[in-house]
Image (cartoon, rainbow, N blue to C red):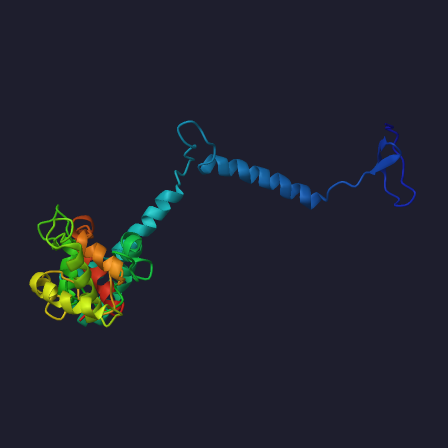
Length: 290
C-alpha cells in the first residue's frame, strides 16, 4: 500500500495517498452541511437519552428527566374516552332495555359498545358474525330458545344458561331417554323419524307414524304437540330448519339417547348490568328478536 498523495489525472481530485493493488482512493470529503447534520443528530440523541426512557436495565429502562411513558399516555387517552362516554353510560345504566331500544341516541351508543363487547366475550362460541355453530345458537335468526323479546335477551345474557353460580340462570334438562333406559333403541329411532317428519325432512313413514305416539307420551309436554317448542322451558322448536346438533336421523337419535346440554356463563357478574344491556342491544340489532 502506498501513502503518496497525488492528483488524479481523470477527475482532477486529490487522492488520499492510499493505493491497494493499483486502485487509488479519491479524497472526496462529505459536504459540510452533511457533517453538521450528523453532529446535530448526535447531540439530539444524547438529549433524548437524558430526557426520555431509553437505556434498558435489569429492572427496567431509565425513566428520563420528564418521566414520560407511552403506556401512561394510552391510559390517559382511554380515561378521557371513558369520561367522554360517561354521560351516555350512566343514561343506559338508568334505563331498561326497551327504553334504550326506543331512544335513538342511547340505542346507537349501546349497539356500538355492545359490538365491541361481543367481539371480546362472545365470538368464541357464537362466531364472529354471530352465526353460531354446532351446540351454539345462531343469533341472526328468529329462533330463540328462551325468547327474543328485549327483556328476555337481557335475562338470558345476565343470568347465563345452566350456570350453577348464578341464581338467575336459565335452566333446562332433557332426559337421557336411551342412556337411562326410558326408551328402547327402536322407539328412539321411531321418534327421531317423527321429529324429521315434523320438520318436513325425509323420513321413514312407518317409523314416523309409530314415533308420533312415543313423541306424544314423552316429548310433547316440553316441545309441544307439533314440535313448536316452549321458550319458558328452553325447549327448542323441532318443526323448523334450525338444529343445534344436526338434523340427520343418527344425530337426532344420539341427542335423544344421551342429550348434550350447552352452558353459557352469567355475564352480569363479569360485565355488570349496563354492559349486559349494551350486549343485548347489539344482539337485537343483528336482525333477530321478537
